[in-house]
Length: 228
Image (cartoon, rainbow, N blue to C red; front, side):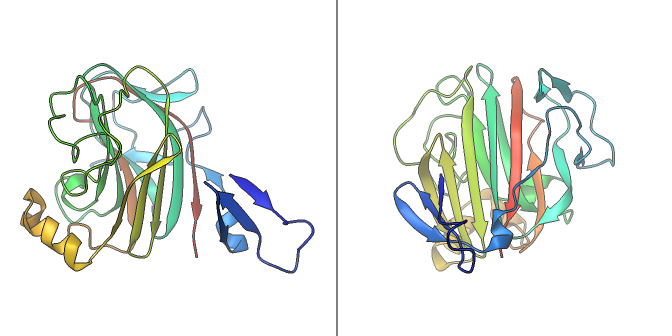
């Protein structure tokens, strides 16, 4: 991602060149800030507790778990944002990143859409592309095939701006959809999420990391910038 003309054109909004496309963004959206600095988990808590759940640790500059633990969640809520992070999942691992999640229900996945994180090749839940890494879990499948993801560092980018959502993996956009659209409503109605009327409806909510599935997971370089 290349910033163009910020110094020379101070009176104009800067332009970001991303994947060959120039996008004009506001000064507010330029303010990246860390959600994890490699040492402190002060920005995080459990879904059911104010403290970081047992089983999540900082190891070599990464938030790490080795098995099934309680889900992790930000203390702060976000509306429109761009989130970037690096992650490594172990063999047969299964996890996910939730966004705009709320505390309306007993579990975070009952309210927050999920960017799937998974060992695409070895995980038990890998039989269809709406379960592979970067899918909008059980709703929107990824494009580009069943790529290997385990035991290496990957880069995720999630853009949530109003109703518009993008899921990126290692520099490629694999999923794009519109929340609350007729297509989205039809997919939800045909899925298990129809049981929870508030699923995906919040305009602002928490970011969560799924912990209660098997497998090792490490996350680092987690940063966010809010969009206007």
